[in-house]
Image 1 (tube, rainbow, N blue to C red):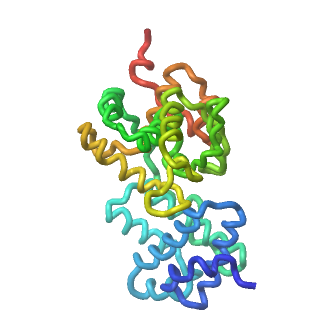
Image 2: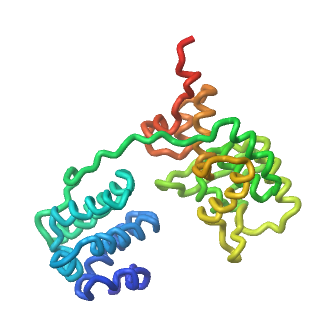
Image 3: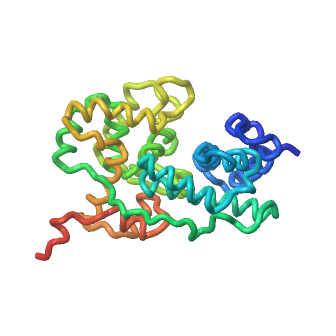
Length: 301
């Protein structure tokens, strides 16, 4: 029986031999049965093809013909090349983990031994980076200039509810409970469902949009394709003119609005357990890192 991934990824794997492609596709199918996100599957393919391109000479040929010939030196060489290109440790860490998982699959299938990339070798020390919330002064400068109801309701969902950019774009109208003033987010990042309360200004923006717009399936329909929602890249582009008009720095992007919501709530006294549920986090440790206290809050009275 054909692998269910066969029709989706063969064009991206043409750089590998026809003999070796059947080894890659079943691993993607296994990830799919474990409910891995489509972006994760695409990242595995990107990692394998990038690893091949970064090798040269005899190692390039060996990797093209058979991924089971991967060695620890191959992975170290690719990490060195990625560092030389200026990639951040956190950016490099992700494909290293994906490669380790794929090679562990090959070993479990009896196709290679021992595993050349282990969980602790190679291991990159990644910095603990705090989120980048927007200061109150920047928010006050930016939001008065967002006059389009379409854009205002989208950005308010991120700022007031801490909703992720991709989740806002994919929200259907039937996720809203107008009586309770909440919105239900199903199968968010990490397959976490949660209920988010809507602030009064968010509800107002949604009601205005409902009264003056032709409603489709999604709160944020795609301007290019019918029956499709707005994607993350479109949301980032929509904020550029508002950011420029307010004179905000280039790093001021839609995710900063979500990062602004969480610290505001925590510094207002909301417990970490409640924030964890609101933000859709798997662990309280992630919530703790994502909601730093303001310097004024940390100062002793």
